[in-house]
Length: 280
Image (cartoon, rainbow, N blue to C red; front, side, top):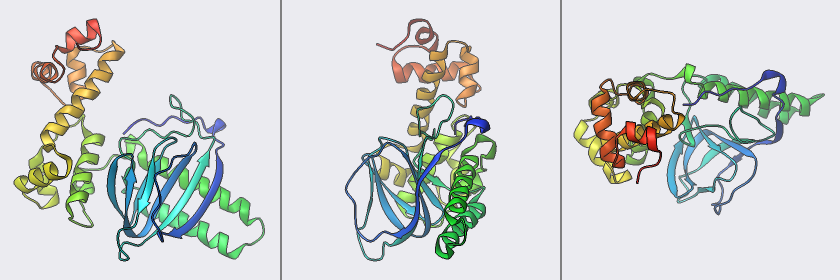
């Protein structure tokens, strides 16, 4: 996860739309220049984001940043979902482009603010149905509350335990692999073991490794190492951290072991990269 810095005095995003709908027909890949958030209220369906296909379930939120190709897919009548769509413009997060939320993965399983987000969604729908006095203004206020709750959900201060991640609603291979990838992307700086993941998900390490490679083409450990090395390269580009500090920031207590992995991945040592820049 990334730190999300917003100046409250400058926080005045435009709510473009908010509505509830069913996945009645498939879409074609498309992009837009605003932020789009899709909250799965019930059911399940498939989404294509860039060239990846994901199965999403109740209490998942799909965050679509500007310029990201996406669509939802309908492969069978049983694959119906109720989705709440929220469109946002003029959102500014310090250090990022307009309407961009910094995320590692577009699919966000709700953990900390699951009930609050549902309650907020429910109030939005009720307000739209009742159409009381000033209901458009109330709908806007509630939509901004939904956005703020989502940003709080994404805050590193609300990071979950491994047990929170692996309380799986379904054990299909795509969901397991996707959950493991999300856990790696949000916790690569911590001590991680496949054995601990196996215990938390009540699966064997052999099975986890097998299905992860089947779905992604790589083993969990190889994916984690490559992810950590990419993050280390980003930190080294800053130029202000020692090799030991960089190693710790990506989950390694032993800087020598970290340096060995970095050289194997990029063909030069972290110290050489720090001095000379891009690997050959």
